[in-house]
Image (cartoon, rainbow, N blue to C red):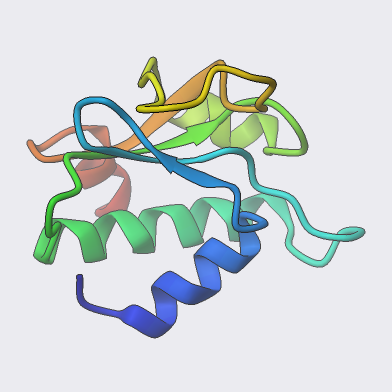
Length: 116
């Protein structure tokens, strides 16, 4: 996927707690930092930028979801539709039992958000 540096930044921001779903989804467990280093609006902009990058070169990723638990901002959860990817090989505790769909391989709400 293009933008490897950007990918590394967002994965780091997601605390390296990402996983793949049974249908090829990439799921960030939650969006958290120590303290308030990243504001909710910044998380939303990062998520939309990552969705835009996936739209250009998704590789084998079919969708991008973000867990709605943990410290994921409520405003981000309200900006996107609910989703429900299932992990390939893990069923323990995770902040991503409830998720929002930021991007999918077909046009969706993220395209509208990118143009507002």
